[in-house]
Amino acid sequence: MGVPTRYRWLLHVDLDQFQVSVERQRRPELVGQAVIVGGDGDPTRARQVVTCASYEARADGVRAGMPMRAAGKKAPDAVFLPLDMGEYEAASERVMDVLRGFGDALEVWGWDEAYLGIEDRAGPRLLGAADVIETARSIRRAVVAATGLDCCVGVSDNKQRAKAATGFAKQAVRSPEAGEEQRVFVLDDGNWASLMNHRPCRELWSVGSRTAAKLSAAGIDTVAQLAAADRDDLTAMFGPHQGDWLYVLCRGGGDDAISDEPRIAKSHSKARTYDTDLTDPGRLHEAVRALTEEVLEQVVAEGRTPFRVGLTVRTATFFTRTKMRKLPAPTTSLEAIAAVADDLLDAFEIDRPIRLLAVRLELLDPE
Image (cartoon, rainbow, N blue to C red; front, side):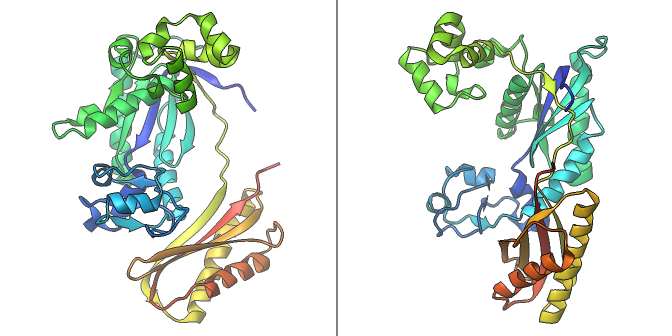
């Protein structure tokens, strides 16, 4: 594994209400409605949580990570949709392909966020703030043009501050009078204190509820109070590693390195929307096998091995369900994998025409 490169500029790209936006591309009538994505889309079932909520749903108090039942009580008139992992992975990869054309390195942190490193610190200084801001705006335009998905970009000199900058950009965009330029936000030494000092410590990257409670017990509630704390007191309270990290973090410092190691995919999937809805069981099984063969070919080409199979079925009424099943043993045998995919298809109660099928293979980590 190579040594991560340090950069003068770090850009944090965050896709706006990602899963909801992907769903709205498929169903434009959902634009402007409260939409909640999570689990199998049933707000009455236990042990399911919200993955993404539209701004309209957030106005009703719905948040990511909230139990779906609680979301159903807060926004009973919202449209609840199930997770479609294959669709989100495909949309995310289209965005990341666009981002790879900018900057010196890309570090993907999930479906909907990534960091770009601009200008290696080991080289000469060539770019000023205005150049980097224009790059950030170009990124936004390119992502929208290529994928139809919107994003905010935070600009700073380290990851932690760049992510905080994105938070300010997202806050600004929710304001009715917000302009397009506010989707890019710069947070640096010049505005850090004025924007952050009065905020609770909990708003700093990696400061969780326990750490915040421990700080509060010591009379430290705001970022300014944390910055005024003695470094030795912090290391005595939290240990040398976390104490030093808090001392750096509250002053706007952080990690300025980007790893250029490729992201290792945890799964691959293939989805297909059919021009004519499928109703015949024989044709359904043929379609599932064809998708299985396609995705397995990609997996084998990468030298990977599947250990679990997933099948997603979407009806003509957009009713979507996914079933997963572990293989008897990890394998690249088409017959063994196709047999499990067939069993998954038979496990569905298919009483409506099928609009879309997707086969997903979850993969063992590379050696």
